[in-house]
Amino acid sequence: MTTDTLSTPPGTEAPAFWDTDPHEHPAGGSTMLGFWLYLMSDCLIFAMLFAAWGVFGASYAGGPDPKELFDLKLVAVNTAMLLFSSLTYGMAMISADERKQGPALAWLAATGFFGLCFLGIELFEFSHLIHEGAGPQRSAFLSSFFTLVGTHGLHVTFGLIWLVVLMVQVVRGGLIPANMRRLQCLSLFWHFLDVIWIGVFTFVYLLGVLR
Image (cartoon, rainbow, N blue to C red; front, side, top):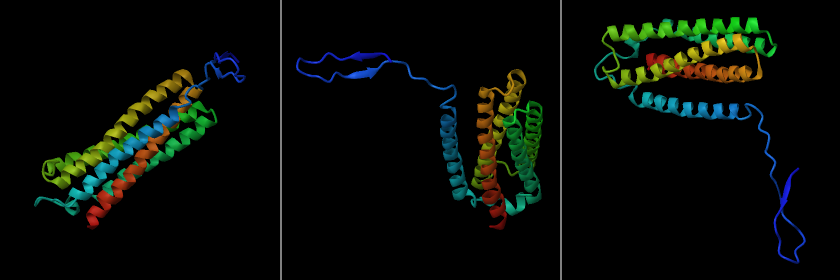
């Protein structure tokens, strides 16, 4: 260990020492902490959107209400797509932990398939509502609905792009520690979106129809 001694006045006996050696920082040591901080900031965004829905969710402006617009059977199918994608991602992580690259990539591909199905159904719902004259400009209820659900859908879109990029990285570099960290971060993000959607399904669709 390299040490330096402070100059001390005559008559003093205890010199001061400090360590000037560089400290070791493991690769990716702060990655998970940083990603958790990002997820917390995303929680704040969705909390504000849910709060806006709580305020404006019953402001129909003489227009259609949730009972007239929402197809709970279709939304239930869409919810199942996202739940299945969360399950397949969990299987991908199990395969990755066991260093089985082929099965891990297959499960990730299945995750992408279910994610695309989810987005397809959501876009179909948006298109149908707009065609029926129930676009986001029709009422505060629809504005808050499109903003909340659309923001979630945008997150899923970015998640799918991230998934494809990560699959390419795994194909090229294998299940190296850096790629494992990336898989873990995407796993947190994907399951986070799943939890947010359960809130959307419960508070926006289900309680909206039962209101």
